[in-house]
Length: 138
Image (cartoon, rainbow, N blue to C red; front, side, top):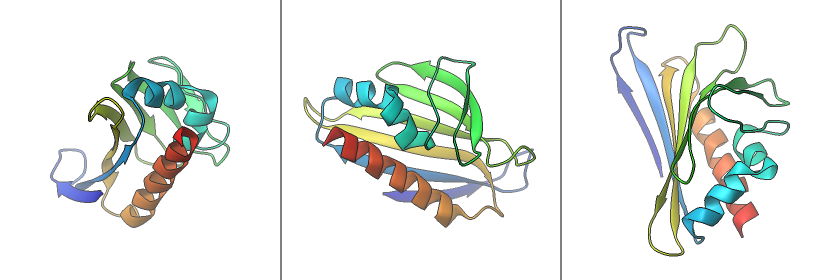
C-alpha cells in the first residue's frame, strides 16, 4: 500500500509523507530478528549500512546516511535519512505490528519530505526495501 499525504508545517510551507506497508507471513520476533541483522539493515537502508542503537550514525554505499533516533525492539526503529550532506533532514519510521501468530505488518513512514522531492521514487525505494526484507524472511 502506498499513501502520500501533504500537510503544512512551520519549517516547509508544504511537506510530504510517504507511507509503504507490507504484510509478511512470519511471526513478529522473526521479522525483528531479520531486520536487526546486517542483511536486514542492508535490505532496509542499502548496502553497507548497519542499524545501531539510538544516537548511532549509519551510512550506505549509495551515500545516504543518518542517525538512529529511536530503537524499540519488536516495535519500531526511527532514523533520520539524508540523500546528501546539504539535503533537507527527513525522518523514516519503521513500525512492526503483529497481525496474528504468523503474520506481521511492516510499515515505513518517510516524513518531512519537501514537496519538490520525487515522492514516487521514494515510494519505489521503500517498496524495494520491503521486498528485499520479505525475501530474507521467505
